[in-house]
Every structure is written in C-alpha cells, then in structure tokens.
Length: 469
Image (cartoon, rainbow, N blue to C red; front, side, top):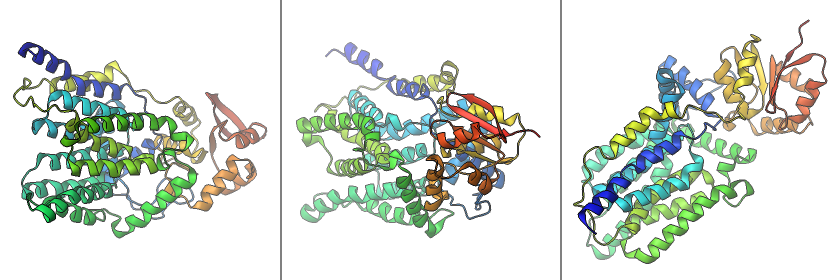
C-alpha cells in the first residue's frame, strides 16, 4: 500500500466520531423520565445540594427521597438552563459517546491502527444505540469508558490511583452504578493475579485491585450512605414488577429487537477472536464476558458491555503490523466533532417522541389549574417538568417512589377494576391527562361523566378538567 493511499484512508476514517455524534443528534428524545430528573436537578441547584424530601408525588410529599444521580441531574439541569434542549442534547451525546471514545483513544495511544480503532468504535456504538437518549446514564458510560481507558494506558500504579479514585467517587454521584465498575475491576484483576501467582513473569495488578476495593467504599459515598443498597434493591424489584423491559432479559418478546445488534456484534467479535485470538487480552475479555452475561439477563447493562467491547474489538481487528507511525494532523478528528457539536442542533432541531404529552400539557396550562394532575405514570415526568410547583402527580416513572401495593392499585385503575369515583376520592385531581388507549377504562368513564369536560384530544392523549359551574 502506498503512502498516499494510506493517508487517504486515514482521512476517510478520521470523521467517524463526528458521524456517530451526528447520528445521536438525529434521534428523538424518547426517555420520559428525563423530565422529572431535570426538574429535580433545578431544585438541587436552587437548594445548593441534594433534595432530601419528596416534592412531586401528591401522596408522598415530605417523605424521605433517595438521592439517586443527584449530581448528574443537577449538571443536566444547569446545561438546559444555560442553552435549552439543544445544548442539553449535545452535552448528553458527548458524554454518552465519550464513554466509547475514551477506550478507543487509549487503544490508539498504545499503538492500535486507526482502522481497527474505528471499526471497534463503530461496532460497539451500533450495539448500544437503541439505549441512547438524554438521561444521567450517559455519565455512567463516560466514567466507565474513562476507567477502561485508564486500565488500557498502563500508567504507573500511583498515577492510576490518583486518577481512578476521584473518578469512582464522581461516577457514583453522577449516576449510582459504580458497582458495575467494581465488578469489572474485580474480574479484570483475575487473569493478572493468576499469571503472577503461577509464573511471576508480570507485575501483579495492584492498582486495579486497589481501585476495586476503593470502589466498594465509593458505593456508599453519596448522600444516601449505607441506605443506597436497600433503595437500589427496592428500585430493581419495582422495575421488574412493573415490567420495565430494560430490567428484563433479552429473551422476552419486548427485547427481541434490542437483542439483534447485540447478537450481531457479539458474533462478529467471536469471529475476530477465532481468527486472531492470540491478540486478545485476557483481562479485557473477562470484563466483556461478564458484562455480556449481565446484559443477557438484564438489557440495562448493554451500554456497559458495548463500552467494554471497544478494546476487545480493537485488539482483535488490529493487524500484526501496527501503523503507529502514521499520525493524523492535529485536529483531524476533533475539528469535525466540534463542527457537528456546533452546527448539529441547528441542522437537526430537537424532536420529541409523538407519544409524549407536551402539547397536552401546554393546553392544560391555559386552564390555570392547581393541584394533583392524575396521569398515566409515563406522563408523570412531563407533568412535573411542565407544572411544578402548581402541579403534583399521582404516579410517575420513579418505580422506587411507590410501594408494590400502590403499583397494584395503578394496575387496577388501568384494567378498570378501580372506578373513577375511587380515583377522585383518593387524589382529588385538578385534571386528568391520559393515554386514551393505555388507560381506556378511566378515559371512558371520564368521557361519560357530566362533572368532567375534555379540553384536549389528539394522538391518543386526552385531558379532562372539571366542568365550570
């Protein structure tokens, strides 16, 4: 291959990170929980710290409130306050992609060919793309990616600890998933200790082992302290009881489509490893296998697995001869990324999923109602963001906020076992905001009730307020 053709190939590959960013910015905002997270983040900023009592749920106001992801919520609320949804979309996308870019950049810094780096980056991106939306989980991807990059760079133990310890502490407060990092670190150390104990031909993985132990302590380094374990377990139980697909295995029907890119990337990775297995790093492969097993049993781990696959795929795809000497001009990758970050929001304005009740909320605001807005629980976040403090909710997407009996009661309402009169008696709602299909029994009763009038009915969403006397 000539030098000219090699440079041409490098220039074609250099914009790949910018292309991935553009793809992310083209997607709709679909996660309904981001709305209450942003409103809670605004309260955290105003309060200069975590909010310790429930502000939103009508029947739980004043009760203790877990501080899950309090720092991530505050950061996202600050970005939206400064630059609106456009700035937040770019910020979130950079964080989400940063989790992939970090280990890819570390591989490149260690001499991996650019084509192998971009191949690994692109395949991992495809595997996790269905999960991408604005939410604090993006911080978890970023921190996990930095952790893997730190391990890949093979820095001195003290340097690794000096960077890794604050990273773990920051991660747990941005998003309470540092336990994934602890598990990854623990598995990562096993091959190293085995080889050291058996052959004594390599240094023991002291830094990774120390980080794993420190990470165990970092789990509790949040405003929730020791109670975070009980709260996290409660959230997991409630999520699975509700049937949230990200908490369930890949083999359920709701996750079959999500399993396609995972299976594709996993099989391609197996093929590369079968052909070039000698290039694999046992520690990196152990982390990827652990996270693949977790992903199969609960789809929510796919983001971590995809990030962990970046160094595995890069190693397997790299030819024997490295192109360490073939350097790109400074800015060849960064400049396209910056251009997309700056121009992307203008070329691709913010779009929300049509199922989100944003237009219905704007219509309800014109009624100047105050009190509890009874809505389907997926609508709760948007109701909170659109109307708090004038509005409170009966239910929202915080599964841990409500007891199992309350969720069963919600199911009774949705299935027509609980009549309208009982709902009115329990919450004294100032308005109803419903998905007319999902909550058909309640919507049907409101349509035939003389005490309520419909002020909005589009795209399957209806809004009812009391009739004027």
